[in-house]
Length: 119
Image 1 (cartoon, rainbow, N blue to C red):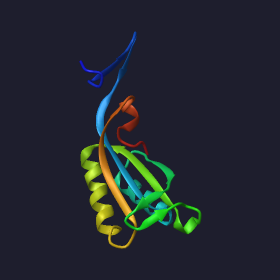
Image 2: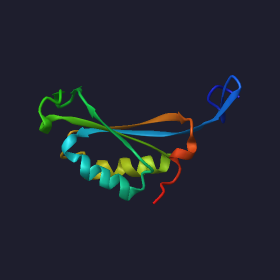
Image 3: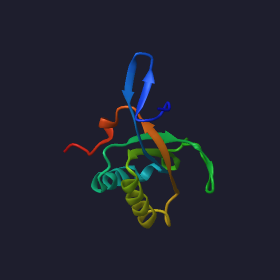
């Protein structure tokens, strides 16, 4: 098996791994509470939120002023859920807010941590 097959071998230790998707959303920080509620309702098993700075279509966003700051939300999930969330945010937010999203292939090492959310 390759380095990122069903098992990742490191010396004597064998770690279980699984291929899945990483959905990344970069948007205005003012949307954080609403977006996280949406992710919960759509079934995201979890997410990570961090501050983001950079330059894009709408200019430079350096976060010096809270109302001008951006966040990066990352969700590790299956392809079907990544598509469902992507369609939702496109329909609800894209037209009126600074927002981009993209989906990447990732390999997670503890796949049990990314299975269905526990209530």
